[in-house]
Image 1 (tube, rainbow, N blue to C red):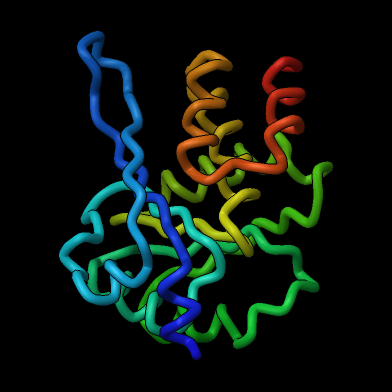
Image 2: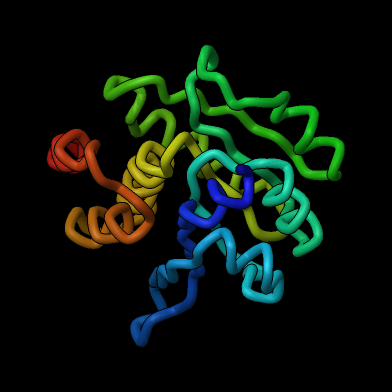
Length: 176
C-alpha cells in the first residue's frame, strides 16, 4: 500500500544557480518519489526539495543524501500518520514547523521565518505540507522578499507545486 502511495507522489527539486547578471536564478526539476526511492543519486546535494507529506522511506533517502533539515508547513492539528518530528530527528536532521493552516498563514512573515531557517541549515532542505501547495506558496513569497519581481516569484511558486493558493500568492505579491 505504501509503495502505491509513493508511486503517485511527486516532488519538486529546487536548485539555485547564478544567471548571467549574477543574480540567483532558480531551476525546478520534477522527480517522482518512486524515482527517488529507486535512484537516490537523483536527490540534489544542494538546494531545496518541495513535496507532499513524506513518509519514513522518503526521510531515509533524504537523510542518506545529506539533507540538513525538513521544514513542515502543515498545520499543528493535521495528521501526519506518524510522529514526524521524532522520525526526522532520529535521522540526524533538523525538524522545523512553520504552520500554514490556511490562506492567512501564507504571509511574508512566514516567508521571513523560512528565509531565516534556510540561512541556518547546511545542506539541502526538504519543504513540505500535505501536497506541496502551501510550501510552494511561502517559497514564492520568500523569492519576492529576496529581490525577485512578482512574475518571477510566482513562476517559482508554480514550478514548486503552487496550485489552489495561487490567488492568495498573487494578492500578497501585489501588496509588497
